[in-house]
Structures are given as C-alpha cells and as structure tokens.
Image 1: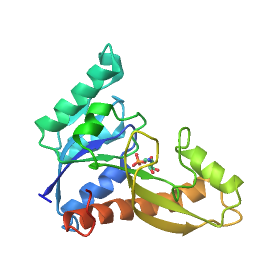
Image 2: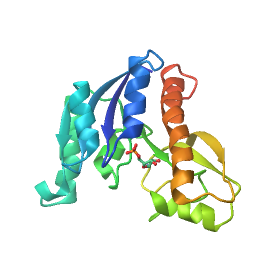
Image 3: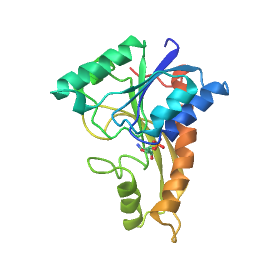
Image 4: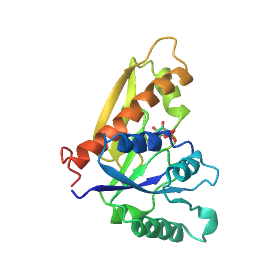
Length: 200
Ligand code: GRF
C-alpha cells in the first residue's frame, strides 16, 4: 500500500487522534496526518489539529440541507487533501454512504470494548463501560475495526484486553481502556503501513 495519508473525523477530545499524530512524530508510525474534520466547532480535536499545523475543518449537518450534501462536502475535503485512509476518532456521526463507498475498507474506527460484545447503536462512551460493568465482565478492552454501514460491525483489525476489577467505576474502567486505545490505534495503522494487515 502507498504511504498512509490519514484523514481524521472527530467530534470531541481527539486524544486517539493525538496518539496517532504523536506516534508519527516519534517515527513509530509511517504515515502523514493530512486533515481533521469535525462536526463540532468546539471540538478540542480541531484545536489539536491547529496546534499541529494540520488543516482543520468544521463540517456540520447544520451547514447543509441534506445528509447527501454533508456526505459530499466531507468526501470533497478528504479528496482535496489526498487522503487514502480515514480514521474515526470519537466521531459521533454516522459516516455517509459516498465516503464509505469511496473509501471502502479504508475507514477505521476505535471502539472502547471487545467487539463483537458491547457494540451497536447507542453503545458509545460511558454507556459501553456501564454495560460491561453491569454484565459482570472480568475483562474489557478496545477494538480497531473497519467501518461499514452497520454500527461496530466491520472486520476487526486489532484488540487489546484490560482487566475489570470488582471496584471499578465507569471512570476507572474507561481510563484503563483509553490508555490501551492510545497504543492500539497507532499499532494497527503501522501494521497496515507495513503490509502486515491487508485491507482488501
Ligand atoms: C474513545 O473511547 C473511542 O473508543 C470512542 O470514542 C472515544 C474517543 O476519545 N470511539 P477521544 O476523542 O479520542 O479522546
């Protein structure tokens, strides 16, 4: 595969995006961060992008009449920056069908649980960790997977496992998982860059 040119879609903090950028800067990941797009003008991810000198765009459904126009605008922005892989990093919106079609098997997401468990619509953020604790799981973790039309459904590319302790809260568990997310996402991308994971 040609050198990875990453386009990020992020809605909030963007700590996973930052972990990927940091891995690139440290020479641990052979890739170029090309563009950051957020649906949320206040996303800290946009601020991180500006600090890193990466083009940053606020593209929201509020700017368009239809979902299709939004989808087109996101696709155009990704193409303008020559992106060849899209990383969702806490992106709270469904990716449009044109973007998915153009980047078939090239859109990745990170999920804060061990898919296929604890995924699907409504399973995001604290709801995931709440469900894991409620189910009495002794292990949780994170998953990097390909994105398709169904939530949290695409091919699993990598996972990391963490223990769940009896006295865990949503906060302690999510912090333990997030620490591993920051390692897993760059590692999976580097495997793709080296051809150890093939996306087709
Ligand atoms: C992470 O927990 C990720 O698994 C989920 O959303 C969260 C994003 O965090 N998809 P951040 O914006 O990368 O800090």
